[in-house]
Length: 262
Image 1 (cartoon, rainbow, N blue to C red):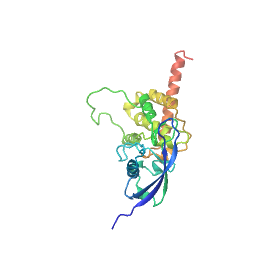
Image 2: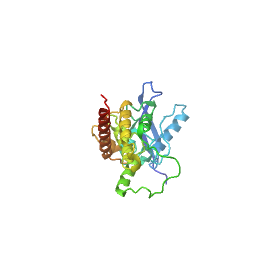
Image 3: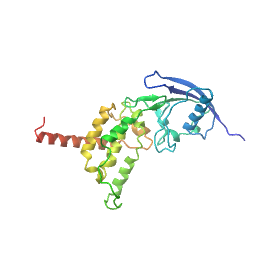
Image 4: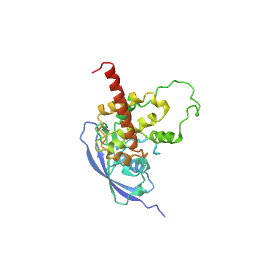
C-alpha cells in the first residue's frame, strides 16, 4: 500500500538581493509526505527548481533538531509557524491538509535586513551580546561544581533564561520589532548568578543602549514574543531586565552627580 501524499500550494517571498524589489511567488509542490518536516518540503521544491534550471530558494538552516534556531521563517504570518515551543524544522507537514496554501516570508524587522529570499541578517543580536552578554573570568581549570552554592530555584530560573537560542522569533513577532525578550533572557541568565553580578550594572546599560542604537523597537507588553518563542521564554525576564537597567541608571546618575557631572 503506497503512502498517502499531499499537494501543497506555496506563496514564497523571493528577493534576489537586499536592494531588489521582492514579491510573493506561487509554487506547487506535489508528492509531499505527511512525515516530511517543513524544511524537507522546501528541499523538495528546491530540487524541482534545480531540474528546471531556476534559482533555488535561499533559507537559513543548520541542525534541523530544534537547537540552533537558524530556520527563521514567517509561516502564515507567524514566526516558526506559531506552534508552541517549536522551531520551523520541527514543524511537520502532517499539520497541513492536501491542497492547503501556505504563505512563507522572512523575519521582518528594521534590525533584520533581508539578504536574499527568506534569509535575513540577524547579526544585530550578536552585537547586543557583544555589548554585555558575558562575564569577565580568569582562564584556567573550571571550579568545582559545588564551589559556589546557588539555591535550586534560582539556578533553575537562570537555566530557563539560558535556553534562549537567539533565533529572533521574538523580534519578528513583536509589532515594534523589539528584542527585549532576547535581551531580557541574556540579562537574567547572568544577573541571577553570582558570577554575573559583578558586571550587572554595566551589562544592562550597555546592552539596552546598543539594542536601541541598532534599530530595535521598545517593548509595549503585547507578549507576542512569549507566544512564539520556541523555547518558551517568559516575559518575566523583560521585567527583570528593566529593573536591572533602572537600578544601574540610577547608580551611575548618582555617581556622575557626586563627581560634579552635569
